[in-house]
Length: 500
Figure 1 (cartoon, one colour):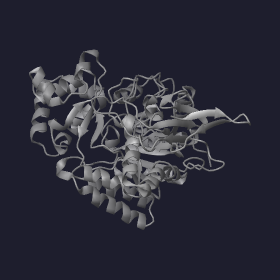
Figure 2 (cartoon, one colour):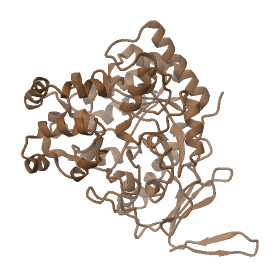
Figure 3 (cartoon, helix red, strand yellow):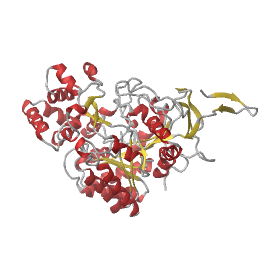
Figure 4 (cartoon, helix red, strand yellow):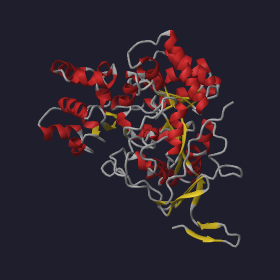
């Protein structure tokens, strides 16, 4: 427990003998921009020592939007519905969204990236095609507007609609613009399974071609057949760094990932966005075709990750489906007297594709290899924290406590290195010049924790248990967490990239 008193000068003094004081943790990979405007006092991050989150990852950001009178506005709202509540959407440009996020007084500071998916949808919808010359020009203009409003870079989600439709020249054109103003390019790569190494080469190729700083999101090898490939991916990153390219990656310390349930479907089913998906699933013939492909196609994501046995339903929106949360699809199908594919289709239709899932797909050796790599920083990939009881992946509540506990058990050298890669190293990669270190003149984002008790407590069945051992958290010098409890959840703000 942290003892507190007032000294003779009137300053508050916290007695913390035997504790460790570190800079506030910086979460390199978050999707909280879809939840904080509606649920700004999310305690999941503060209670594990996180004071800053990089939002707008995987090509998803709530802005920019096409005008509300167009179908593209509604298309993007529906694509983002699975990772957050229905926001007010009272903005169109990126700056308007950042104003709304700031006004919500979020629990943590937010470093915004602009999502390629939002830009592409606003300019040319969710069709599987190349943008026209004018549409690409509009995408570049929207990117420039986001940069002027304070975006720190661009993200892509090259496995998600509509970013998956972007060819290399489109990505390189936009990345070149990002490089021109010193931003960062973060990418959920085109493949994390059978073609992982080709995807890493593609990401490195963006850095080589454009000079942009590249951040590979949540580096992993997904599926038992691909375990062990992470070592070769890291070797490729090391070669790129030796070449003089700015390439790094991030990682979360779990063997399961989480994303939208619709990603289990073959890519052609997702073309056209949510309305087209639901229309296809209304046809018995199309359902049979999809089910047949899921059974036999080794390139389908479902089969790449090892099949139905590795999948839990995470969060659902429809009240009648709440009983499915936290349960394996195979067990649910048996209980419902149906097969897994039919259950998948039924859930997606009833929940309008807003369901998320948890997938057990990584190996411990691969995850540890990335966690120990000097070019890797930590990102929780938090999504879907819409209340204090949301059924989310436990990484939302435990990522940083878990990483620090692991380092504490490994010894002082590992702890020092791990804290650096959760704080100062991440700040330097982003270009945050006043955070990530405990130093005069720096913002006092701080975390005080007990090395004896620091640990994550969230599980897949009880994912909202807060971390243990975090005794105090300060955001901009003000106390946000005391003795493990949030005392002020409204100290965060949007950190806009300075204009140059």
